[in-house]
Length: 295
Image 1: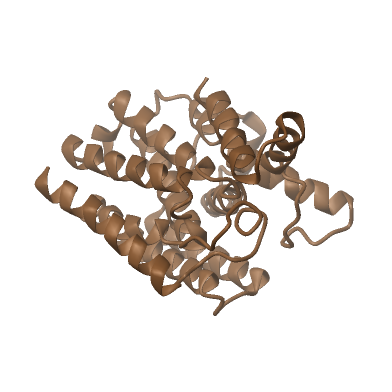
Image 2: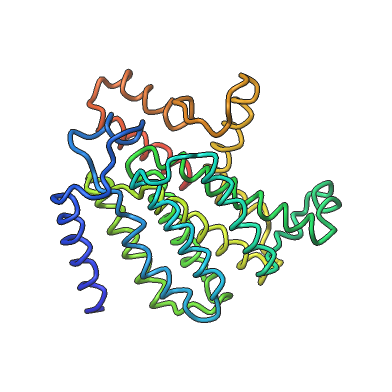
């Protein structure tokens, strides 16, 4: 417990130091400049790196390697060193596909006859799993557009897994997982307080962690309904899939950002309806979506 409090204190101190030194700051995009008077550190994923590696340190070597690569890919994006969305997408795809094949990770059965018949072949199953993880990763990056939305969503899911005692299936210590949840909620408070954002580094790595965690839990317990897993992940997947469909219909590049996502529509509706500041409308929109997800 003492180590946990020390780590939380370090998060607070280091985050303030990064803010003062103006390192890894957000300054563009729907979720940044329009909501904050000052640039905010994109440090959420950084503070999750060590706890995540520690949590998966026993028997998940390839996961840790892949998680770290996705984290650094996102960090390069946040630092404006690697800004091409198309190239980042292709690298993500390659990394995830290699991980799925090496780890023999499969989302089976889905209990959707058409899909199960299609992925009966192992290689098709690998491609389907890769597709699911890619949708989740990029959808999570979309919903990170509001303070607390993705991080709140992440906290909600891992708390449900802890509460339903599903983590024992993958040999996590209850204490370690509880500490991980506490760190997540502490970062959520900072996120809601406009003290930090996850950034691409956090959105890429944490969504991958979430997807892997849920797939392994489902693999280890076939009595769990796949629809339960789908319901847990509906929000980021919905945002991404419908964004792709909408852009294709409108003959736009699916990889290019826009302001037509569900959370952005709710934000604009709240701002117009209640005539409140950008930040308050931002937080209210997140709370509305999170409350719906909680139900």
